[in-house]
Every structure is written in C-alpha cells, then in structure tokens.
Length: 140
Image (cartoon, rainbow, N blue to C red; front, side, top):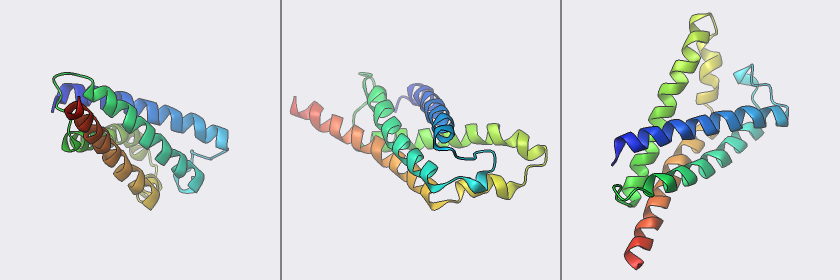
C-alpha cells in the first residue's frame, strides 16, 4: 500500500462526498441543521455518492505503477478512506459538541443503518475496483 497516496486521495474523496452531500441535501430540501431530521433520501444519495466516489478514487489510486492492483489492496484503500473520514468528521463535529450540541444529535447520523451500509459499500467498491484492475492487468 502506498499510504501517502491513499491518505491524499482519501482526503480528496472526503471533500467530494461532503460537498456533494451538502449541496444535494439542499436540492432535496433536507434539513441538515438537525441531524436527527435527515430524511432517508439523503442517506440513499450518500450511498450512491459513496459508491461512485469509491470507484473513481480507487481507480485513481491504482493508476500509480507503485501500487499493486488487488482486491485486498482496494479493501485496504477503502478502510483508509473510512478512517480518514472518521478523523475529519471528529475534527468537524468536535467544536459544535464543545459548544453544547448534544452528542445524541451528532451520533444520530452515524448510528443510522443506512450510514453503515454506505461505509460497507465504500470499502467493498474500492475492493472490487482493485480486483477488476488486477484481472485486467493479468489478462494483458
């Protein structure tokens, strides 16, 4: 695994998902000021965004000749992406929590089963990209 490349692309992927989620929730009329009131349609959109971003950024990650293209390499890249996202989320949501936002309000988003599905699909999609590129490399 090329950790620097994985970390850099994971941060970029996070920014894309965060920005797209923010703008699309506005288009859907969702109230993202209250995490507990986020509609399921927002989670469905996040799932779709997670799959697309995971595929695109995993493909970009594997474009480097220094990165071995494998299913497990993709899974590892996906896990790095999720961990980077978790760290960035803590950095984003720590100030509101320290200013009195209830922890339950913040955790409501993360405890939704659809959020867990988005995480799992992100990791699995990155793995599939690595596996497909591995097969394509061997077929050449």
